[in-house]
Length: 181
Image (cartoon, rainbow, N blue to C red; front, side, top):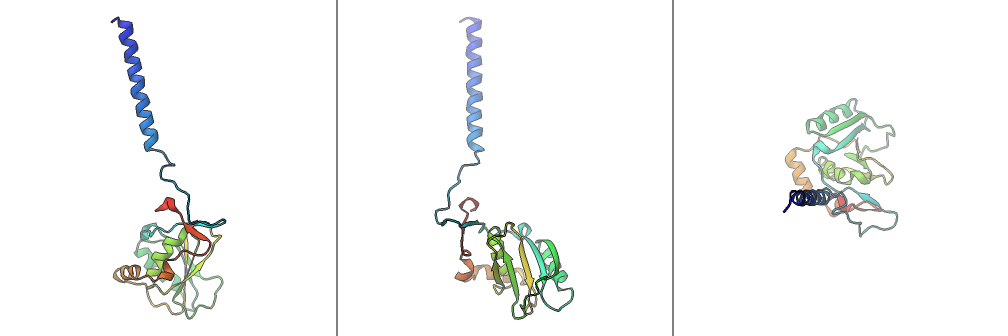
């Protein structure tokens, strides 16, 4: 074999190895892999994030709907001590009459799983207020007149395992996003 022929074979071999590496990297980094269409969605339904997140990954606003001064800041500190990301705290602007509620949790499709976790901190006694058009994953925690304190970690774990079927159902006009499981 001549030197030119050996060199040509070597170049072809190197190019083949580069092509194989390129194809392998493309397949591994494919962002479309595993993507599926939500089969249980109806026309107009919004995809809901149903993942039960860790506290450090949950963003909340804390609002006080009671006459107890400073309650939002106290609850804010309790949630921060439990590693939640508290974005805002203050009085509930609407001051809806929730004197007979422990809390109201307002959330949108991106906050469904976070709502499930937060509800456990109120021993599954917080009322949901689902907002279909809400775009963010933040949950508003509105403290009501029946609030005493947040649950302990043991109580939270028990509440998460004892959720009733109503609390585990998806809100109306939503379906679970199959790409977030």
